[in-house]
Image (cartoon, rainbow, N blue to C red; front, side, top):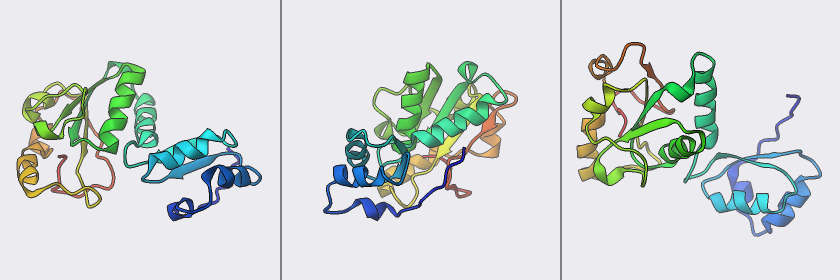
Length: 189
């Protein structure tokens, strides 16, 4: 692509300087901004200047690049529009990005997790074992250190661990795509 990246820590954008001014300054040196910052309003403010295109590399609310990368990789081997995608995990930036992809591209994405951790409006199946029997793609996402679950929720989430035995109940040729970072034994949920 001929790009030369200039990496800046996300704290660079946590400044007293107006982001409109910062975007204008960076436009002298860059052709686009790929921003990974927990606060989506930072990206919105940078993009509002129209000085540079802004790509959302990840926020606390959304993670579109990861999902687009997964969909691109899958599309190299199959028609993604015919796949039944099962997201195993709680509401979070990955779950919301899959929900957005589902709505934007007309995919068949379903979530399974404890009822209190659902993404509002996302198709949902409470029972993981039942959902697994119809999944072509299984994507687990554990909460991780950045968004730990309360103890009571963590206990109910243990029923949502994707195991080898459970994957054996899925249709033949199921694809397992864990969200990084992943840790054996954490499952998805």
